[in-house]
Image (cartoon, rainbow, N blue to C red):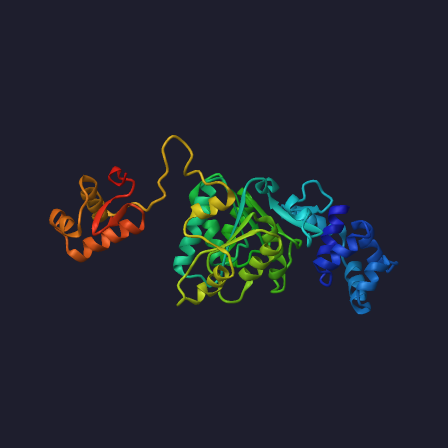
Length: 370
């Protein structure tokens, strides 16, 4: 009865998450539904906070619903109802200041037990943004990290497609803004079902709930609360991604952003996040480092963080390893144009491979420096 009553209460059109939390702070789910449906007296804290007209609408809606029918709808869709008192309720949400009173889940809640990174962004993503999100999804999953998104079109979907293509140990987690059986957008239906099968799909609303616009800003707080690190790949100057980023920052969740061209509107929001202090993401290593999962220095082989030299840079470096060289000596040995050799030497110096003193170049760390 409790699960069915929770589903019925959450499904009342006039209820809303905050009002439901207040109601269930003072009544058990079954009692709350009965008191509303019969017109009986409710706790004063709830009635004082609920306008009379709204309370009448809630009573009429409760009288027209059924806990048994609501539970049947959940079971038919393979949805599990978890109230905040349930031991299976996500621990990350249980302590949240805006914790949902109930969540409707498909899949395995244990997908939240490992490390978790949110990868989100604009629905109006560029091809480069989608590619970046897909790479991050695949690489994070390859490190056993669960990737959390809102399963929206654009960046969110690309991140989970990356998880699916990567075949790693990390599992997909999605927080959606409709009922857990209502695919939105419809083009993501196949991806939606895959997430529910191999990972976890979470909604604050019962089966059949339409994807009303107001539900998406509401769900963003849940997405933020489930993450250890939130990565925004692309975002316009306004939008849901920035709402989620603010919600993450309020919860002391690390916010990271992928730098983008100042000419691209799709990067206006992410670039502003960087200006405001978000950490930049230039590769998955930045995210893993933020998580404390940087394995590059692990094992018997030393890790060299310097960029790998290209073909011409390799020739320049080899010449300098044989003996200290001037640009003229490099050109004579390699046979390339002066502009190309000078640029290669400058980049090797910038990247820490060469040092220059008085026009002579030699390898960084060379014993000639001792």
